[in-house]
Image 1 (cartoon, rainbow, N blue to C red):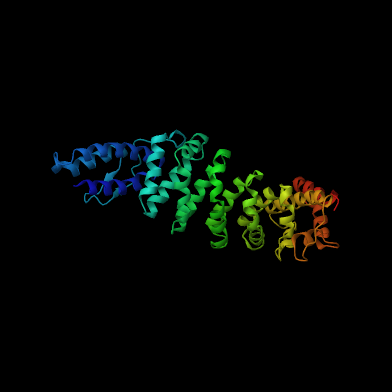
Image 2 (cartoon, helix red, strand yellow):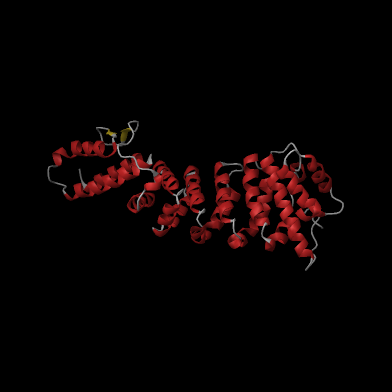
Length: 339
């Protein structure tokens, strides 16, 4: 078997090995041993197929198909298991290299899952950054396969929990926002994108990059499923905590169903975050009124919430009877603040 065929075989094998974190370590060992084998091409080539099958079995515990077209049985598990938090630099280098070196969707997904699991740990978040892994992972957002994009978003979600990583990931915010606005409503990809934005919007540093998407966030709040509503409200709460964004938020058009969300029958996770969002806006609006007064469109979020008179006042007052102290606290924040 020639060196080219050896390389193709190693790539197919990599996909199978990446099925678990232990597979990544097995892949590293196998890659190293394979390189040694390639240097020995021509020496005893008649036994190469048999030796390769024995090698795979020793390293990973997997059986090889006799025709060498891939992994025949992945049910035996791995002999060498390695926890994601114990992955070393060379292991991450291998899987990042695999992401760059293959267009096979299933292999890319498995590679992203492996990196994503490791990125749940701070030490690996730093390693991936130092290895230049952010661009490798973020480039997967351009993949034609939606499931690959989802896996890439999940990795970015874990990486974005690291403040140092956020500074590098900020250049990908526009791409994430574009995906959020163009992908299928209520899709898994949309939820994954909102999770990344939630982490990045925890501080005020990158809020300005999201201003133009505020109207879309509110549309998702009106049209999204419960899961989407929760995720988009996490982003909106973060944005509303920034006084500098108050005017932009209040200028945006309120969804037609917006007031219907202020009801005791609405899921508490949605209702509580919605009330925090409004309470933040009202507090920051008071700061704006002390300096400058703006005029707002009749369909704006400001007019719906703080117009006079407004149905919102009645709806929020009835929530004082809600049987939950957290909800009552946020209602009190809204009612007691001057307008």
